[in-house]
Length: 258
Image (cartoon, rainbow, N blue to C red; front, side):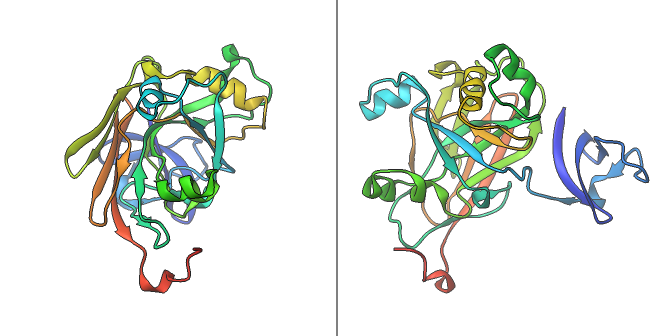
């Protein structure tokens, strides 16, 4: 089932896509019709997470391309909720960075509170799967020696286009980044060092995962730079297709942190 978040008659809710022309409220809220024409709803950002938890260096081929040893445990970092945008929204390249990269990733959307869950319990905590782009100011990541600034700019976490609640096997999905129609990044989630269930369990032993939180599960080899005017898509088998244009920061934003 494909799930989107919408506004209809001043009410915001998650809705299932029932056809190319209509949606249905998941919670069967009183006063809403069974089927709502898609043309009558406003699409909202897919998630409103309390946090976006990201996993670094979680693909073997990505570790090899960087010449780095495989980690013994997941490497975690955070993106703020203010970095989240939806399909079609512009990725804004900040003036203080000279290299902004794409990173195609499978994202997990948490469906219920998870704290100290086992790997066996982890799957029941995942509401569904979506596409994400872990946009990164690579030069600032190198300059700072840690990742917060480089990963946290507004617009640096495109997510969408919907939440897919069922995939055959999240450990065997093709994943691609396509820039201006050219495949730049191509891999498979089978190459993950730490699979999704293990990540949910591990993270839940560090912090409480809340409904709506998002986990970015890492990126395969082939990361690379974006330029103004590019269109970048993240494509994941059985999950979806996320497309975003790329623009530069405008003159009114010239006060960006240097």
